[in-house]
Image (cartoon, rainbow, N blue to C red; front, side):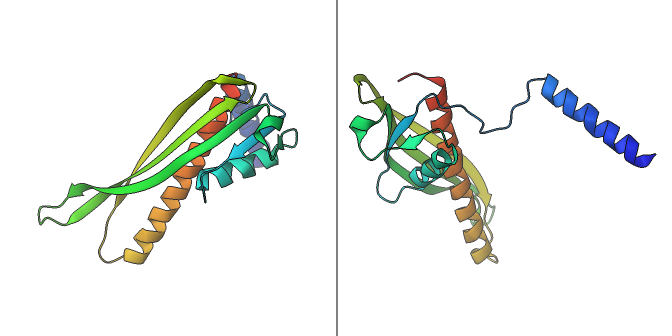
Length: 163
């Protein structure tokens, strides 16, 4: 009886989610067959975009801009850490991480559509003098998450607009 009830509840939840238009985050359909990706140096965002594009079997990453329908140029990316909250004693309680990416999306056939865009993502992280190694690892993890979010936003923009 319990198994039937559990299966019935799961079925109702699945029907409710599919009926309300729920869509998993990060799902997008890119309307291009060939893409040229030009990351800036050792770009985290560039590596993530390349990995996500390679997962889609219908899209080819080409080596030259002239062979592509659309080009993504990662101009720069930077992560900074600033003090967000100080304690009464004057020590740092919280930092704000800012991850910014400058990029362009352009069509090699239409040079007038190239516009420089910028993304800025912000996260707060608590600070502890006792857990320096753990907080450093947490900061790196947050920066990687922000780079992944930036890549998702760039690809979502690519899927929404015609360049």
